[in-house]
Amino acid sequence: MSRRTLVRSMGAAGSLAAIAGCTTSGTGHPDPHPSKPVPDKGDHDDTHDNGHGDDQHNDTHDNGQYQGSDNSDPNSDIRTLTSQVELPAQFRTPLPVPERLKPIRQTSDTDYYEIVHSQAKAEILPGLRTPIMGYNGTFPGPTIIQNPARHVVVTHRNALPVPTVVHLHGGTTPYDSDGYPTDFILPAETYGTFPTMPAMPGMGAMDDPDAVTSRLQRDYTYPPQPRAGTLWYHDHRMAFTGASVYRGLAGFHIAHDAEEQALPLPRGARDVPLMIADRAFASDGSFMYPAIDPTMRTTPGVDKPSVNGVMGDVILVNGAPWPEMKVDTARYRFRILNASNARTYRLALQGSSQGFTQIGTDHGLLGAPLHQDTVVIAPAERFDVVIDFSGHKVGDEITLTNQLGSDSTAAVMRFAVARTVKDTSSIPSTLSKTAAITPSASMTRRTMKFTRGGQGEWLINKQPFDPSVSQADVPAGSTELWTIVSDFHHPFHIHNATIQVVARDGGAPGPYDHGWKDTVFVNKGEKVQLAIRFSDLKGRFVFHCHNLEHEDMAMMATFRIV
Image (cartoon, rainbow, N blue to C red; front, side, top):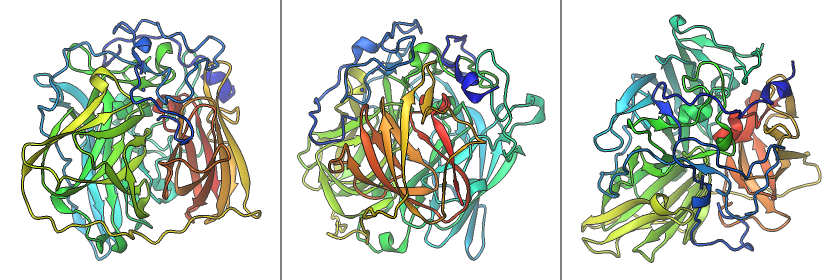
């Protein structure tokens, strides 16, 4: 039985029972190419359902081909779930900052950590308890700090009733610690046996003979990272990544290097990670997710109205709804991560004329600071920015808005200026020694087409994900030119490699394409050329769309570093 046969019935409507704290119930990256206009706001109310999971989303036709008409709005034709609870007032919850995990032991060159994957209940919305799947029982999980020249070993223990897989997103990692999607950490034997390739509706399961599984725990080993950067770790289990991340399995991993630490950038309490994620909530406070199998044990996939992706009507920052952060009259460094399953944001500052000073992206610092009035951030992208509050007075309020949202999704969080201080930080004109990759005739060129299949599955080069098939064997340490072609809104992500954007549709890179990246947004109808520099760590890895519903529905491919 072929993998294509297995994915044919994906997206079929199934049971939406409220099991394991996950039940069910569409809206807004403008085209990053600067030549295309972007509206200040995206109104997506026409894609909403009635809040009960009924199939009222008609833009995905039975032939499986995308029929939408809006080429610029990165959230068009993606469904927004409507919460079944009264939404809380905005800017009432203090911004939480994830705990920094302490090593359990240290040697001369290695820090050792332990993290338990466990169920818990969290008060995300006031007065309600939301069941989560969390790293150490928290959402977000604890932050791991990797200092220059230090190795990190994390022992992950699985106390959940389902398998997990941990991927260090953006990390340079050995293949057996990268989080290949079938390399399960299996739960306790009492929870049963799980195939490495879970079955689609009505089909039998397949096995991945090369999968490296373990029972209850696994050590993930991370060498010193080549550059400072805001990385993150999240679940990467085959066909269930969307549900796992939605329920809380995500956390920061921040890598430092000597170059970054020598700079006078804001630090300490003024170096703040911001994990932005949208969610919807059922009437009992549980996360609302349209899974065919809410137990995450047998059948992967989401109901048919959600096959384009899942978005929610509540914006969380570090796990809190529309929080407020009290700030000093000083510069702050914010490491912004879009940890949403499918939503893209266009961030702006209301109440301030300063805008953002972008100092970094997915894989660390830019060569020089860059002013941005807005920041468009697709799922899994990171933007490292400085916001300067020194020109404000105590009592001023600055709102971080989402210009691609409407109603409850138009605001993200608020900064309230609370204290006057002397600030000794600064932003130097040179941040990092970086060099642009110049394409050459000797570079291997490949084209990867991200398209919808005739049966509704999401494909790469007309192929659904198959662990046994490599779509590219690349020499270790090499640089290749890949052209990504898209028929929908797809954030392209590649493991164990770093990217520079060379061109969009034959023109210049877009305003948000600067620096070294691992995730690049490709809008509907675009062709984006990428220079990809591969790690010298050999083995089997994947690239995929980071719309998590697309990834789960087969839009992923294996490549090998040889």
